[in-house]
Image (cartoon, rainbow, N blue to C red; front, side):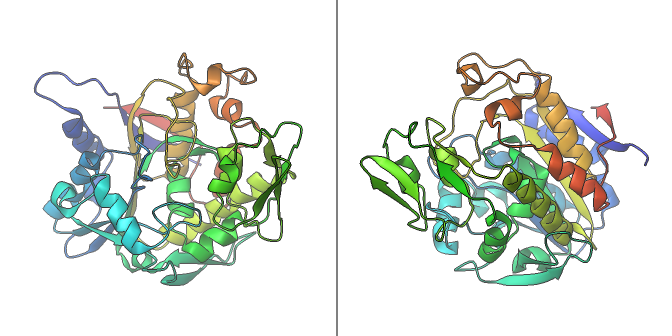
Length: 369
């Protein structure tokens, strides 16, 4: 397969040219004008950030993309789907309020915010994935599927279940309805290593399904209630909760690739990823840890596989940030920062599976703007 083109610009800004102008130039050079936007609805998929987290993308970046769509005659809207876990984005009203609180209002971004799976996360479209190995019919937020054009605007960071959160995580998991998220997450079962548990209770606070209880200040998990979201694993400060089956995260990554296939096939798509504030965990957390590597730059491509691969390569070439979790004892895989941060994950599985689904290629040409 021919190498895909991935366009890159660094984060240097000289007088007279700011980062928002650089982002616009990057998007144009990457071929944005190949898409016919006139009179068409364009979904801009973004993570609005859980309130309390400060590493999500600034709304200024979203405005650049929305303005570019409007200038070409399109009708843009920012979108995401509701979440499974405890937090402030479990229903559309709280989700929109959270988005506004984090700066994503129509006044700051120039377009409306629509929660794609509706008030309670039940507005979904069943999308066939005929070549899916794990998913034959994805449950996607209806507003995402109603759009004529799909654009992903991704904050590239680490992730406790998938290794990193990139374009595929933003699309596949992010566009799944609540039932879709349940389908993707469910499968892996965690175990509490009692000798490590310190009884802090953070896992229980982060469980939306009352699956965690405490006996003698040690946690235990009711696997009949566990849905597989992995929040307890990410919340534990001493790694006392781990997956029983190492295959679970691999299957999650494959399902994310198949859900992405459901979203992107059959219509024009464009993908943008910013490697800034590379926190070790997802923006779904109500906090963000210190970045694991320095900021890198902004990238864009029509190929989501090549884009995620390029982002991963660029991050793994960076030095570890002193004082980050990668300098903690036990985090020693500095040739792969994501494995170092979350040893039970293998991010390559998602991209390898996406290649099998013909969603793109890991072979890319990096073109610097």
